[in-house]
Structure formats: C-alpha cells, structure tokens
Image (cartoon, rainbow, N blue to C red; front, side, top):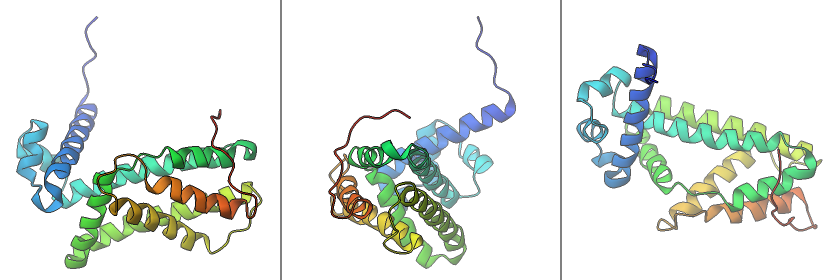
Amino acid sequence: MRPQRLNRAQQQAQTRERLLSAAERVFARHGYGGASVDLISAEAGYSKGAIYSNFDSKDAVFLALMRNYMTRSLADLEAIADLNPTHLASALSQWLVGMQTDNDCLMLTTELQLHARRNKAFAADFHALQEHQTRKMAEIMERIFKALKAPLPLDARDLAQSVIALAHGISLMNPQEKTGVAGPIIDKILQSLLHPGGGSPAPKRFRR
C-alpha cells in the first residue's frame, strides 16, 4: 500500500516542525547568538528560503520553540489539575520529581530575555508569551489548591511567577544536570503549602 501523499498544508506543517527541530539542535550547539538562519536551514536540509516561507525571522523561530515548550509543559500540568483530588497531590509530586530539565530551553529563555532588553520590537512578542505562561500557570495553581481545599498562601500570579523563577534559576545553577534538579525542590515547597504541617505524600503511580 502506497503511503498517502501529504497535501500542501500538511507538507508545510511537516517542514515547519523539521525546521524547529533543527533550530533546537543548532541552538544547543551554538546558543542563540551563534545560531543563524543559514545554520538552521542547513541542519534541516532545506534552503534558506524554507525558513522565510514559514517564519518572519530568526527571532520568530526561537519564539516558536519557546511556545512549543510552554504548551507541552502547561498541558501536562492541566491534565494533573483535572485528576480526582485523591490522586492529584501525588500525581503532581510524581511529575515534579521525575521532571526532565530542558536546560537548552532554559538557556534559550535567558538569552532571549537579554535580547528583549535590547530590542523593543522583539520584547513585545517575548513578554506577551511570558505573560501567557504566567497567567495559565496561575490558573492551574488556583485549580490545584482549590481541588485540595488548601488556601493559596499568596496571590496565584505571584505563586506562578515564583515557581517559574525557581525552575529556571535552580536549573541554570546546575547546567550540567540533564535530569530534573529543580523539580524535587519545587515539589517539597508546593507539598508543604498544600499540606501544611502534614508532610509530603510519597510519590506513587496513578491512573487518570
């Protein structure tokens, strides 16, 4: 049976994903400053025109990478927030303890923060993406604390920003670690807030 031919939209989506995967590898080797449209297109096996057919600029490529990373991370947490309260706390703990630290993405975020300070046009899109992440994280934190009947210790937005800052800061202080360093620390903090005086539940496998 012949493989089904992709239509134009499917081909473009496939090309876009390959370019983003190539950009991720190029960034890991060269950093944001050292990465270039030529390197990304060569890594993906396309002409430079393929990038400009899918993205407005190198900045747009890396913003798309960040958006993908944030989307995956927030989707995982939203799925946990939807769990039965009986399993929610241990599921959150399990996810955090086993969380893989994407140091390449964390380094990208740091470099883009510096770039945003120097480029006002880029800063608008970058800060909008950060704002979306903070708002969604705050909503998830509210849902988790409400489901477990635990009072929020501070404003949900401030809690979300604290969790994000911890994840980035702790991981960047341990750049050689490829497994989660920040996750277990954040887990202990959140569990102490969700179960004040009661200790953290032992992580266990769960079913959704």
